Image (cartoon, rainbow, N blue to C red; front, side, top):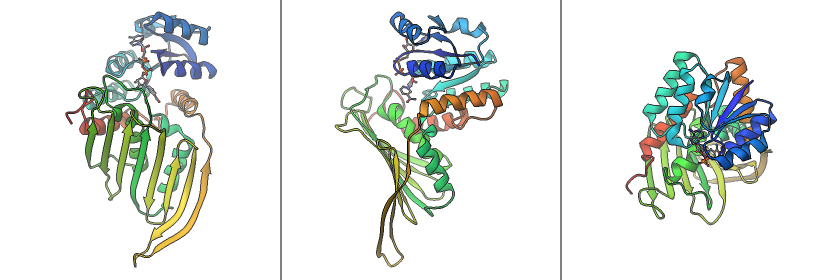
Length: 314
Ligand SMILES: NC(=O)c1ccc[n+]([C@@H]2O[C@H](COP(=O)([O-])OP(=O)(O)OC[C@H]3O[C@@H](n4cnc5c(N)ncnc54)[C@H](O)[C@@H]3O)[C@@H](O)[C@H]2O)c1
């Protein structure tokens, strides 16, 4: 398998390392000379280019795109139209129209199109999905997700687009549907029009609600999902990488029932490694990726509906 990484910046260098370790990295395109040197040191066997254009005719099987979001549509479309499979980092695009355009291009050409919704490859999230789908928690009343830290403030997108995109992907995955409505609220402290701190509330078909808090201006590293259901509650601690089941409910007579708690899942995988393995598997088997283009477009639709990427007036 010959896969080219386009954009070997902060995140793309991780794609370079993982694909190299999987023996699937053939080329790297990176505009900045110092970063090209770093990529060459990490992957001495790969061909290194300044721009991505030569890769359109280099005989690669697929590309993995980790350039800034505004470039995703143009770069991905060029490769899809050249008959080359594409992995594109999250968020897939800044607009639903562009995302749907990529989905259509992939469909027309029978190409694999996968989006980098990393957390869908975390084993704990996979466990949660199976547990909830099996009905073990009964009706799911609400899901509460928090992802906050002193993070990298971005200039083109707010924290919902930057950090929350992961959570929106997980919440849609666990709910098994797109939300029917959402309410957004955010605060711009550092830059006009770019929220550092956001809240997104979503209503899903069947009555489940989801509440998401994201911040890159926060004193502690908080990554936690709480699911409140009819038969109990689950807490996924993403820092400790475990899931705790709380046997806690309130019955029809409004009496509290507290049966204690137990850790029901432990252990993290290397989600990026698992994500790249899944991509390679889809390239080989032509299976639809877990985070396929449509999934990426559904997430962009939620984000765009909540707050335009250049920052909503708030
Ligand atoms: N999955 C994750 O957890 C995760 C984490 C961080 C970032 N990301 C995503 O990865 C993408 C990149 O983010 P980043 O933080 O690495 O940004 P970055 O700015 O550090 O890196 C982007 C790189 O792309 C290069 N580039 C841009 N246009 C190019 C072109 N035409 N040809 C060759 N190189 C080009 C730039 O020189 C730069 O080095 C974004 O979509 C971001 O949202 C994903």
